Length: 508
Image (cartoon, rainbow, N blue to C red; front, top):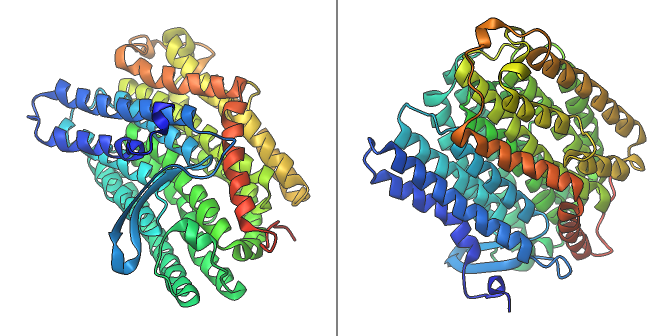
């Protein structure tokens, strides 16, 4: 028997709580022991990452469904349980969170102000994000989602940047949008809970149990709308997107990496896990509108990227554009398109985190993010230039990198449902190529500027984000089945549970 299949050991709880234990341990470390604080953060995130990799390898796609399940009754009167589990959808996102969390620690290695508080909040943030992907109970899901918001706000206003917007403005704008989204989520989830109790006589917030409840179609339409507003705000769907680029610009590097890499993916994950598979009729009803707004994401944000001068704003609006592909994949409501949407969340998360790690490294040394200030950096910092090019090529969907099979799968799945919208979305790739290649050309090539001769290239701990995230982009690009087979097992299992009576399929 594989040791990972031993049901008595709570592997998921260990993965989830190790960063939290690291945060608690850091509290008792004297603040002058900077190296020890960083070591605790690095070790705790490494443990979670290694265990996530082992779980990823041990998961059986042939069986599918939730595996490594943990259940502890928590609030009996409300039917709330501490329920964890992973399937082919949540497991890649769990791995993504730990890849980025581990890399974010090393991307923050040179933090000098309030080091102790920074890493405590970072570890709490990583724990909160992981919890949303592991939760099998709506209450636990919402609990971890709320845990995410506070650390982000504090980290932005203390360690953030004021280059284009003040960090106070960025932090408050980000927090207000996230809290508005969570308010709609709370309303929708309470409605689900109450209506399920009225229909079944059983108090439960278990997601798998709620999937089996036959909610009235009218309720599904209203309930899905509430939930979708919350999740679509989080995923920065146009026109609820404006908080995202400002949030990136004002956030420290680690927060930008986690924010772009995994926080937005909670929105896409929630739409699929909770929206589609609990309220399929509601998803069917609102899918065309989501598809229309998704095209707005892709095209509008890509056009905005063409006129941006700040590196973080280029990647920020690019992230909004790429989330449009996820939304189009969701709106098509078929197995192929949903496969592509989940794979795109993973691939984009790795790419965006790598991009922000490289930008943060450059900003730390140059104290500017203005594209026009640079030129010829490939001669002065060649390793950093490789990181920029790898992230940039992944952004425009170059074959051989993880983004290509994900985007291709979305387009294949969506074309038969939304032909015109899919063509418009594909046109976004052209705009992406224009602004990415122009940005790379302006900062990396051409005549070198003497004022940057003093720049030091990536060294020491700064190597970690490039090696970890860059390797993932290449490995999953060359061997896409490592990701796609996993995702397909999760999506197929969930569609099978909907049954023949479910109303899915999207489109006009």
